Image 1 (cartoon, rainbow, N blue to C red):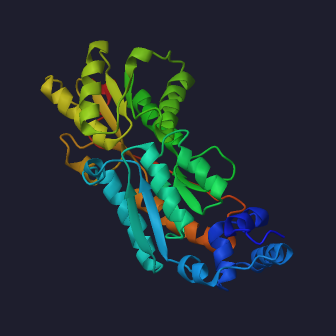
Image 2: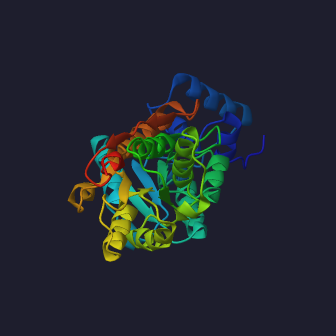
Length: 340
């Protein structure tokens, strides 16, 4: 066999990640016997001989997990959603004696270049990806590399492991609640529709209306960017359409929408009701307090870590697909139109 065969080729022939091959080469105990035997059989058949120096430098377990967030530092360190998510990931890493490395990116090109480089050099044991765009090329590259990774959020590729919350059901519940309260012209402010969670929440909004026999008015659907400023601008766009309620796809955007309503001299919920999404700590401090959909952000982050560690120990197959439930938290911002 070719003497220049690489660890990457061994991983492809074995159907396991590069990290798993490295664990077998280093006699790491966190490898299932059937996986170990499969890799050792390929090594024996190919006559692969590891370079001792490279093995000592790059083949050993780093005990470092990377968290990839394709956002700017300004967004990550001001949005309480990311604070809660990072806390969940960091606490789980600490509990399992792993170090967390945080990667923030301005562009998809930077994301792919840097994350792929650190994985190929075995600087990380695996990655957790969050807030990715639909069609993110990093996901495709990681699949091709057989790199161990877990997504925080749904992905259609059958081999991708992910931890998600049920965005469709959460949005459906929020809009159904407004319908039960008697609201007629229910608008929505979506997240960016190149984001899978934003698409799912938009679908939940539409399905809730359709299942009550309501027509879909595209003028009542405005896309924003998950920021307070985006919610503020989107709310001003909706006001000429005279909605009597708005489902906003994040609490951060809902706070911006609430500021726009107050600036326009609208009263919440008497003039327009408002429902958010996330149940961030700030939701109870708005005026009025925000009705919202609670998603278990910290728990999802922690589960992503334990899922990744399970993959490192037992291999990536079968794919782990964990979907956590959401919960409606009723506060004062949605009122009751039937009593008006």
